[in-house]
Amino acid sequence: MRAIWKGAVSFGLVNVPVKLYSATENHDVQFRQVHREDGGRIRYRRVCSIDGEEVAYDDIAKGYETEDGEMVVLTDDDLAELPTSSSREIAVDKFVPTEQIDPMLFDKSYYLEPDKAAVKPYVLLREALSQADRVALVTVSLRTRMTVAVLRVHDDVITLQTLLWPDELRQADFGVLSEAADEEVKPAEQAMAQMLVESLAGDYDPEEYEDDYAAAVQELVQTKLEGGEVKAAPEPEEAGGEVVDLLAALQQSVARAKKGRGEDVPDEVAEVGDAGEAGEAAEEAPAKKAAAKKSPAKKTATSKAPAKKTAAKKSTAKKSTAKKSPAKKSASKKAS
Image 1 (cartoon, rainbow, N blue to C red):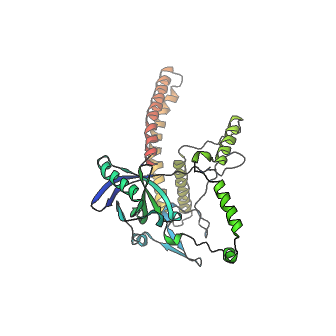
Image 2: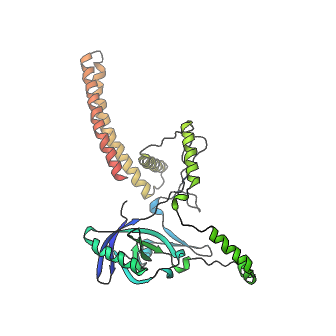
Image 3: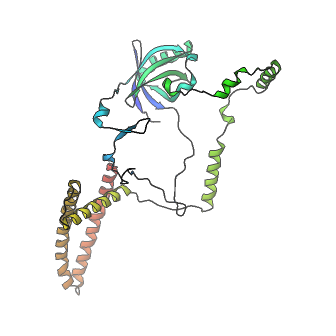
């Protein structure tokens, strides 16, 4: 497992450095949206609902939609003024009886691992929680937001479970139950219901239950694989670079077209166009030199010796190009 947070648990004057790990993982079956004909992945674009244009990431802001449908756009300066917290402390406020925390309030669960030098105070806190039959009510800052959580013991490990805010727990307001409040349960019916409960009493064993849906999906997929029912739709490994090149080519084309008609070119398009022209000029210079070198070779095409030298130069060029290509690949990996 990989730690997602580092900090310290503090209770009284005791400080326990810990690492935080996610205690759960999602095993739900995940499907992709694909083209029925060839199995190609369906991609989504960031399109503005007003003008229908695709929006770049740099032009995307956060918006808050009010109850009446109005949209309030929040800037980075607005968000910077909001209360945030970067504290690395899990501060114990109090130790409360376990039954006072409604299980409905539990949100996400995490494991706490102590540093090697803090095992003893960690064990001290763990034993104190186990013997007192209480949970530690704490505040912790996760993803810059302060939240309330509890510390409890699970399999000799201290776990942190974040809690929902009280207003996030929906109220069950069902009229049919209110109307049924006057319904009187007969003693014989109550006794029979209690007998049914006793007859089905037992212990919880997780091994008795299985996600039959996930198992059926895996079996179905395996059957199709063995039967050759596979849509091979390989995607280019460096799709991101191709998109950027295409965008630059389109912007450069727009700049040239507007210049040709004598129209003003937007600054962002002009910059790309100038950069593209500079790049083409830089590429054309070596090309012209190469052409000049190749022209004598054409005159001596009947001579085998110059042809061999030319072929040797080409193979050397291919080798140098091949040596450079890994550097490009590694650069693209770093960029990604």
